[in-house]
Length: 198
Image (cartoon, rainbow, N blue to C red; front, top):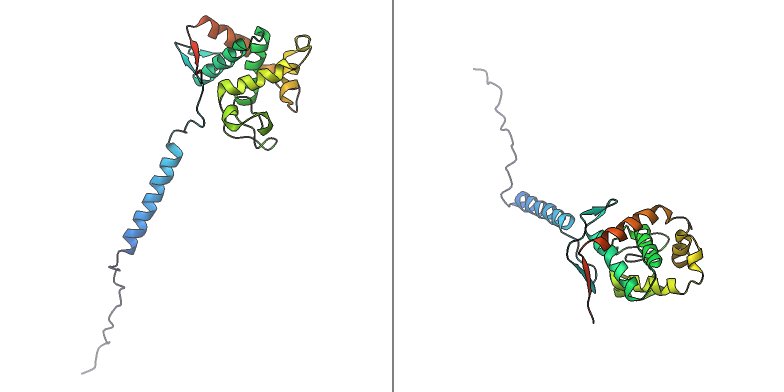
């Protein structure tokens, strides 16, 4: 009797029972969750603020809203506390619009990596904590502005440029009308800026 083909046992790899796949999967899931948390978490307040806005601000003015309007109100209050003219106050709001979109920014750019705050002031302007404080940075701006003689005879953008030394002296022009609208609307609101006496 002829022998049939020999049966060959198939070798099927057994699944590893040491749990490496489960561990690696859990680590991967943990990394995805951690990354999602980092991306989605709210940004921390970068510095303690010395002024707050109480009362109701307009919902929006010329495309500016929320914290932007609160920061504009703080800039306005700082100027008035220092006895600056209403034109100076409007120039300051215009400048903060052009420098930071009325946001307290904790980063600079290629031209000024150490620039910070509403006015994107660099290290020589003052301590980080002051530059990152909306009221404090406005005071720094107004002090420099007060040194500029003959500023009332200059176009507003040239006044801002003389203080900020922007590459383009006409950079701020586009925000002059917005600054006027924002100042007027905040003045017409019942918002009050409260400055911490410390």
